[in-house]
Amino acid sequence: MHQLSGIDASFLYLETPRSPMHIGGVYIFAPPAGSSMTFEVFKRYIESRLHLFKTFRQKIMFSPLGLGHPYWVDDEDFNLTNHLFHIALPKPAGKKELMEASAQSFSRLLDRSKPLWEITFVEGLSGMEGVPENAWAMISKVHHAAIDGASGAEMMAAILNLTPQSEEIPAPYPWQPEKVPTQMELLTNNAWQILDVPVEVGKFAVDTVKNSVGTLIEAFANVVQTPPMPFTAPQSAMNITITASRTFAGVELPLKEIKQIKNAVGGVTVNDAVLAICAGALRSYWKRKGDLPAKSMVAMCPISVRTEEQRQDMGNQVSAMLVSLATQEEDAFKRLLLISESSQGSKVYSKAIRANELMNFVPSTLASLGSRLYVSMRLAEMHSPFYNLVITNVPGPPASLYLQGSRLITHFGTAPVLDGLGLLIVVFSYHDKLSVAITSTREIIPSATELEQDFVASFQELYEETVIKAVKR
Image (cartoon, rainbow, N blue to C red; front, top):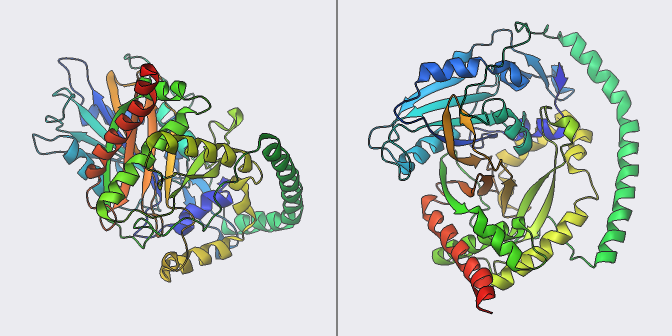
């Protein structure tokens, strides 16, 4: 038995039929020449790896009377069939058809009575450019209450290999579910936790003061820019009440050239360059639609604070920083410098408060009620946005990954969008490419594929303004 943290539980409280709170992605594989992957082989392979990540066989158990956050308990009735699905796209199916099937999957809630994950095996990718005829894909969904971006990568590491050979990893012993706790046991556990709250709040307050003082000293010493504050982002077409109808698309960019952008401009990071590419794409798209805000858009960028000891842990270990995307700036080079300045300041100030622990001190009943009221009363439309969108950059492995001999060609990630925050961009580096995935809703971005070319154009413009002009100089 393991209790969810406040931030983990918040993803359950925020979930509605319009806002499924899962993360996941689309993985495209190429089997060895002359062979193919079947659903039966895929199912046996997944079954052989269930013991490597406990999330696979644990479900949610809510506390009695809502007096504490829910718990993860073993599912005594676990059945793999409830979590693996099989679809065949009508041939010739390409990237567009795969993304549309993925969007439909991402629009649906996971079943809370079972472990909160599912994988769909997809065959029929015969019309996808740059992909062999025998390619296949999988669409994954895992509830955000169970994992963040970093632990999600750990989950996929339980499935993927670094070599084409299928590595046998036998379970050390047959799986036996732990006894599910009684309601009285949960009530007793919650009572002891209530007694600990004053002590924990005191520790949190002391640590926050220490961190804040250290942050101010570092900020003054380095003369960093104060980051954007919550609720100061401009109103935009992205910040409205949403529906459950998802749109999903993705594009690949060359990682080597993005690193060249970083090297050509002193003091910027690869993440700064990625944010600048996103900013340029968003500026072009919304300007074309006539909805570009006069004030710079603000992005929330999650930061993993997961330690080495927490690599296999469930849940979310994240902080966050707010970054001005300088979308009011027309010049791509100047925009990059402004974003770099904003991100440096945000990194410093994000150390002041342990955002991943703050929700632990919000009573579960209050958090659940507040979430329901916020959604039902459409409060997202009654105040300035916390921020305009989320951009999350997850570093992946530089080497190829395999599943039962099939090589992973590319991966596009997704995460939740919700009322007032209807656009999310997931950036994932793998091998020599950077994948950029766009998740939104039909009322905000009817066709996410339209944004793909804006990202390509934004990358090309930034590369020209930095690397090419630096060579000419």
